[in-house]
Image (tube, rainbow, N blue to C red):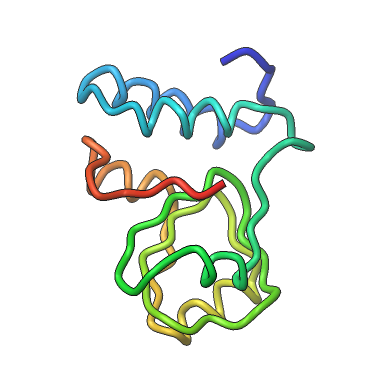
Length: 119
């Protein structure tokens, strides 16, 4: 982690992901930790429309940043992100999507298999 992260919740998440990446030899968690450790200006921001364009039904997606509510949710998936805007969460849950935190998906799947990184 090169940049100085101030948010204690984010610090804990990055530390946990780096630990899981070492223990389970999972490069996806190392990359997510690296992307979350960047400055706030260069963090990933994804709209619901972009999410729907780049995914298929039933996929598991990790977004190392924030999901915003622009667009329409059309199919169900599992989306893990650091933050969701209230409108994005409402739209995704209405379309039978599962919105969870990155820490939850990390605990469910420590090896990172079957998870796609969207940035």
